[in-house]
Image 1 (cartoon, one colour):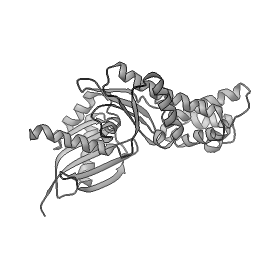
Image 2: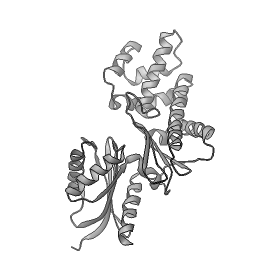
Image 3: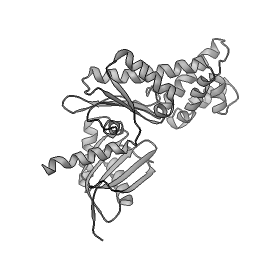
Image 4: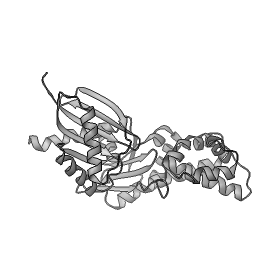
Length: 302
């Protein structure tokens, strides 16, 4: 069988990895999702071994990869990306690596702009006038990630417990969290949240906050509004550092699927940056990796 020359693209998230293979003519021959278990961008040797193993196990045997690009959680610095690229080259794979959030602007069809991901965590990325990557946020749910699912649960729990300690009647947020965490009362909620301070424990309960807001909880509304403002602040931080482009593309399970957060984000961003246009990503972020893989071919062709 004659081998096919293809583009290979990956979006390596915290829980799953999306892998796509396309011919240079644009025919998709593989589109699959695999687990991201044990992924870590650092040290570079670990990340390169992890990715090389997945490529070997999943790429069709009859293809030749003309260009490989991937975005991955944990690539928050340019030197992390370069170290991964070098380690993968040693293993026989020439790749272009970026943070997974950096995929969403090209996935939306823009050459420049700011990408904001609010899923389990939260981060914003862009590029400076020289094309160098910039990022803000993404510090993890224990100390940051405001606007992401896990941090929204953290802040909602804080707000509900503070109101409880102040003797205020429950407006629906505390009871929603107690029910969703499957505990009996506020004291047990405290233990359930604190005893396992991980995104895996917190993030799955995020929908309870939006449900409480839909039922009239003002505390839940305030938590959501603050999360949206914090996401908008990430965009401001990047703009202050020289991020280029007038388009802001948002992606991630929470901001895409929860209209309250998306609309509040647009309002918060408009107040400080009225000239920026906000777009909700409607295709998979892996399309951005395909864009980068194809773009990487152009210098060699010139």
